[in-house]
Amino acid sequence: MADRSFIDTNVLVYAEASDAPDKQQTALALLKQLYETGTGVLSTQVLQEYCNVAIQKLRLPAAHIRAQLDMYEQFEIVQVTPAIVRAGLDLNQTRSVAFYDALIIASAQAAGCKLLFSEDLNTGEVIAGVRLLDPFILKV
Image (cartoon, rainbow, N blue to C red; front, side, top):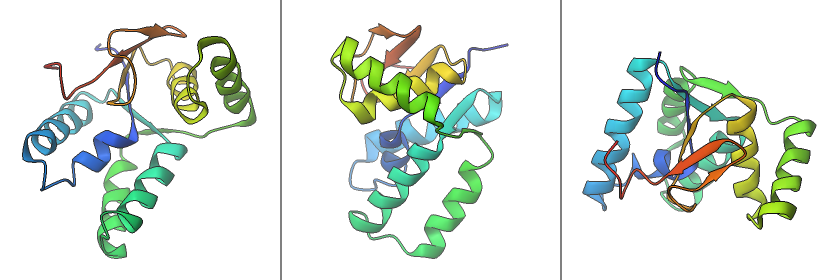
């Protein structure tokens, strides 16, 4: 079985980005691959951040956002718990990672993910046993 992979918010946002067609194509291909292999994992934080960007920046209609949420709920969803928040705080303090990024890493770790796909982190670095990969610069 393939390694479980955590999906950061920016992948979901780029899946909507018709103004960045290369990144959109990469995001859609990655989401399709992770869905088909059953290895993709999201968190409640990622879904909240996606909704915020979709409403505020992308100005997508609520019906479209709801439809996307229905699709994203087909992935495994990690509930951000107080223990994950504490682990994120620890990573923030020990690894000098911004708190919300640390929370993403802590969620990936809690879900047993070996990979975290994100544009926002240092690709190739391993934090808390999770390898960070920028899908927009690496072929996956």
